[in-house]
Image 1 (cartoon, rainbow, N blue to C red):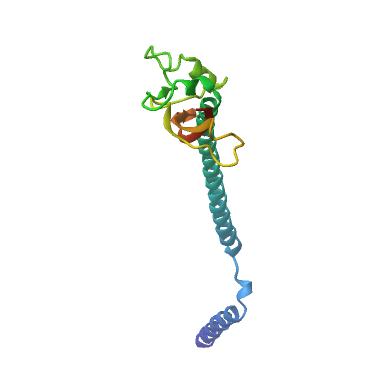
Image 2 (spheres, rainbow, N blue to C red):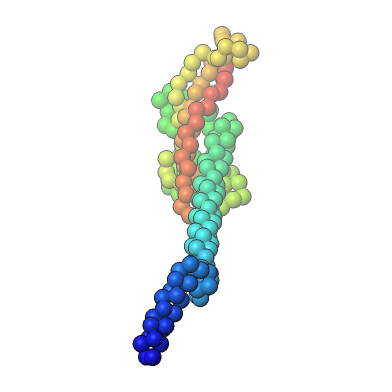
Amino acid sequence: MNKKLELKGVFRSAFNLSQRATNPLKNESGFALILALCMLAIMSLLVSMALNTANMETGISGNYRTAQLAFDSAQRAVEYASTKGDIYTSLGPGSAPYDLDDNDGDGNDGDDTDEVNIKGGTNWGLSGTDNYVAYQMAAAIPPGSGSDPTYFEARYYIVNVTGAGPRNSLARVEAQVGRIVPK
């Protein structure tokens, strides 16, 4: 009798194993928890990547803004030097460049009228000591300028400036200015 029970137990165990193998959906204990944890880990990774990208984009736009402020300072200096007529009356062949940093000759940069006008109410102005306007050459006036070439000539100047912005940002601009003057 014990042998019959023993055999029945073996057959039941074998039957239960085959039943589990043919019907795997009945044995899902814990699978939903594992799936939820995996999805949570994937979502956390995606969120951290999105935050990292947002921080990087913020830094890039901040760097662009500081570089743009430095460039605007340099452009203000070029515009100022291009429109201030008395700079060009002192420049000619063989003359020393007009110093936009220290045009009063006292050795102090930043206290001059030119420097104050270039800042234009902002905190950013010129940087360095090589901000100048220099005579380049004289030539015939460009065709179609409407001036008589027998009475007028074109004089060309180089305006070389370095604008300063926040966080030590610098922008260097070199421009050529042409002026039509009487011979």
